[in-house]
Amino acid sequence: MTRRAVVTGSASGIGRTIAALLAEQGADVIGIDLKNADICADLATAGGRVAAVDAVRERVGNSLDVVVACAGISGNSPLVPSVNFFGVTELLTRLRPLLAAGTDPRAALISSVSSVHPVDGALIEACLSGDESATLERANAMVVEGNPSQLYSSSKAALARWVRRTAIAAGWAEAGIALNAVAPGVVLTPMTGEMVHDPVWKPIVDQAVPMPLNGYSPPEAIAALLGWLVGVSNTHVTGQVIFIDGGAEATLRGDVVW
Image 1 (spheres, rainbow, N blue to C red):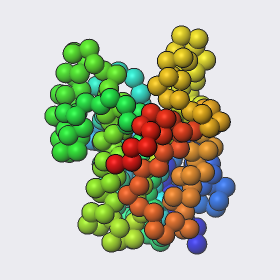
Image 2 (image 1 turned 180 degrees about the vertical axis):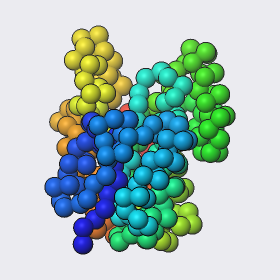
Image 3 (image 1 turned 90 degrees about the horizontal axis):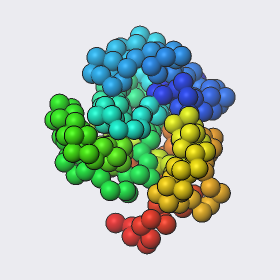
């Protein structure tokens, strides 16, 4: 039976790579992105998320087997948590009933090794409360306060915590849906390309994300792990945040596990 898969952020980077991998494996893949996708939608907005889910439902009916949420942005915009957190969690929540009706349903999303960097607790709690207005208010305050660099790390840390609590919540594991996250280090995508080739930024990147095992990751390495997590072979892994970062998290945190 052909598996039906939705991939957000499908126009570039990790999203494009996992979409291609799933298609090679025989899946019917529906890509979502701002442009150059099967479904064009702005996941930074509530309306865009609803439109994306409606368009998915029109294509697949009432059941879906796979969702891989890769859409995300970096930088200092207050919209970072709207895309990185709400654009992922609200979409997955709205697609959950379709997954529950699917065959061997699986979902995965992208966190980041930056989730172990300094974060803003107030922003994380606002995200996890589900209050996007309060989150945007806090994000704007962080920009005004001159601390926008923690927008990205905080949004990814909030995602990691959301996965942990949601995977075992009603309607997920008990419905057979495996929900996991991967946390990459530096991946060679359009998002990072300029920084890793900039003689000023490269040393900063390498200090923040030290990767002793094989250096920067190609997107294919991340896609391979995502492919297994959303595949039928994964029968019991759920609620996990798996660091695929060349040893960066272990370098930064040492032997601290909990």
